[in-house]
Length: 333
Ligand SMILES: NC(=O)c1ccc[n+]([C@@H]2O[C@H](COP(=O)([O-])OP(=O)(O)OC[C@H]3O[C@@H](n4cnc5c(N)ncnc54)[C@H](OP(=O)(O)O)[C@@H]3O)[C@@H](O)[C@H]2O)c1
Image 1 (cartoon, helix red, strand yellow):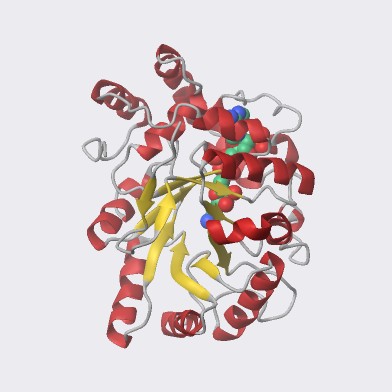
Image 2 (cartoon, protein in one colour):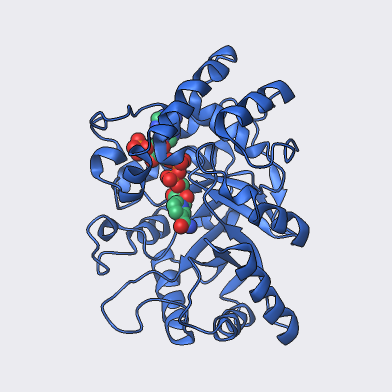
């Protein structure tokens, strides 16, 4: 098992093709469990770690005052290892009750970055991402604020998440015109049950040299086969913990039909479904890194143990037929 390194879009930055997502830290797992997951990921060769200022126990309760635990735990656990990884975090979500405690105004970004740096116990963030598009703030204001953070040495690269292709194109236009830093990466959802980015965003990113760091490659756990349609989620899972966006996936019978049809493809290779789901994502043109989530260290070691093994053209064709990809020709690195 060797985790490769890929360039982040057109930049010179190397990031691991699999990254660790830490949305579970402080939300579903405590500091000890988080330490086990982090150690397993770093030992396996993962060098890109993703978090966000909003990740924490308040997410399932809709409480903006309980945010930031993921960054706090990560800051506590990383120690010297911080300097050997690429650390990515995000700004935008609501982190307080005040009128400027969310979004992408200069006011909020400047305060949010200081709070993230403090929690992460570092004086720089390698990749600072805006968490989604902010319709209420001029892009120019956001980009100028981010540019200032880069000039101040607090941020190395800037990226966006959950942006449509046209929104990045608009931002790039402003960055080019005003000679500001541009979004070098985008973080969308992508998996065997969520292939929407193939229509527009992925071809755009390939064409423009934008790094694509995808989240939920295992469909939030659905693509591990642990859930059954209409049944109670297994104890200890995120489904049982009530994650809203996972429940939306669990309500769609289509997703379970896909899982059932993928099982024989995984079984023929003696792979788990999770290994198939991850290797498929990594085989797609334009993908820089897949952000794995985990609540146990063995999740990481198990899912990564088949990494580097390539799917055959026949398997890719079968998978396209099962999952209804919109661009079956966009395959294989
Ligand atoms: N930008 C955004 O808007 C956004 C949104 C979502 C996520 N993200 C980022 O992407 C990261 C990953 O997202 P995700 O956690 O949804 O990704 P995921 O990899 O699709 O799902 C991870 C979940 O799958 C289950 N799992 C993983 N490996 C397993 C294995 N070998 N066996 C059994 N179950 C396994 C675990 O569920 P259980 O915990 O239930 O066991 C784990 O929490 C997040 O941490 C975050 O950094 C970003």
